[in-house]
Image (tube, rainbow, N blue to C red):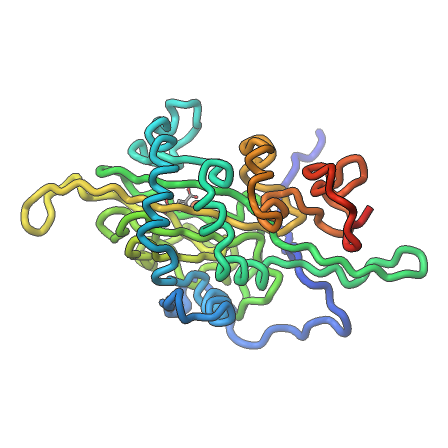
Length: 349
Ligand SMILES: O=C(O)CCC(=O)C(=O)O
Ligand SMILES: [Fe+2]
């Protein structure tokens, strides 16, 4: 009888800048595990913080809160663009969705770069978000000998998904999970975060106040550094990202997290029932050479993509991941998107 296939988790280093000289020394310090002390989750002001501060905080805790990223006008425009799509959505399962990943009270909207310019430009294209994801998800291939020439290639991050989450009163907790499961990531425990470890990063922007009571995103600080075989996650270790409208929460895809229960169908401390919607605009980025979670080519009409700034068109998936990934007729997809555009010196083909 043929032996049955056995899946053995193999530590695969996911995407990083390949070493330019000697390999990295082994890590010092204690490997992190569910019994390690939980790191502090830092909060910054979006108007004064730097990309470096956010990156440093994310590498330690796996999540960071950034206050005041979007203003009231931007939030109003987002809601106008989004509400008709949320209203059209049905409970998970009714539309053919399988399993119980989302509570029945959750409504979603997708494909947001073509449905809302504000979403595309002010969330997906937010300068702090672009800075953070460039720092953590850019890959540099330092060694690629083609004959007697070594060709260094840089692959910038690309859009992974865009989802609006409305969690209605009465919803239960979404189970804690890691979003990098989509890319089959397995990591052994680490003492500290190494650049190159992440397959993705998420950005949640509050459309309305999010609280522990109405379903704020919760996550386990530091869980990105644990051995992925360690589980199941323990709810008592969660931190709730409570946000004012316009605040953001960034999270490494390797952290346990989930949307939370919305208890506003129950009487509050004053004995009154005041139902609240938990409304969050979310987007993830991934590495330029990994498959995108949400199929951007099918969900976004190409004429809508053409209306975006070129840097966003590339980020949506029309950029080439160098050296050779994503070509059309052996040409850079940006030339397919803009057939009239003259070739630029940086174009590959
Ligand atoms: O709604 C949230 O806060 C998180 C949702 C989430 O993590 C997911 O659907 O993967
Ligand atoms: Fe998730």
